[in-house]
Image 1 (cartoon, rainbow, N blue to C red):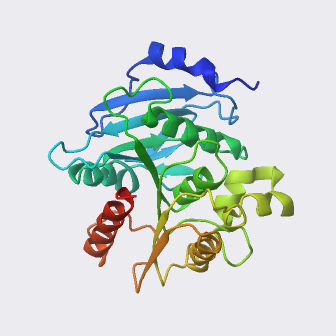
Image 2: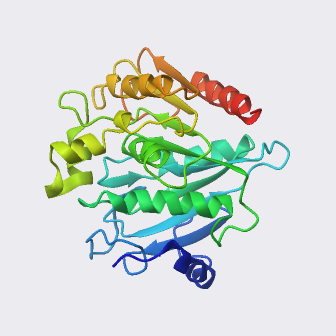
Length: 292
């Protein structure tokens, strides 16, 4: 049953620190679960972790917060959405390890453990939007960690979620950083399993068009940095190129870096040849938009 967002302030105060796995975060906050969220994802089995840091059957949303290094603090924060094809969360190299890097460079980072859609596309989006509201201080729960400029970071399917928050949410991030994101549902230009998991039995031409996010860009979409590889066979680079073109057509500040090699899913892994390049590009871009 639909609930209003205002009901959740009291819930957040009551839940406080959630019992959660230790990723080295300073603070953990339960956002909600299927019983208290606006929508239910239909998953009623326990969360599974068959391999370390690969979370399946997620039905409880939480934030793992890594505060900025005070000596380098920029006043910015990010909500990080790990990838995993909307079927699991790769919560290490696209989650808490990335958060540690952002925090060390002065940006408070909150890793979002979002609920799997399981054919309910509204579910991960409402988790991401509520996480943004919490980190902005518009909802209770993260006192001492909030920021005036809260962006969103996402990888692969998490990039689709981050772009969804940038285009479909009422409360939008101040900026977005998208790593090899899933964007369009067009055949031959997408990652089919991600859209099948997102939309389930409701997938049709209409839902494909709605969640093909290059169609949803407006002048209100936040500034966006896209980072991807030319040889990505999992999510074709044309997906990001279409999003970049839509951003420019709508007058949105954007930058895109396409690295020659790397394939898909490199995140913050040491083995990615262009790791130092993307990190410097991200820091330069964050500094640039922070001047605005």
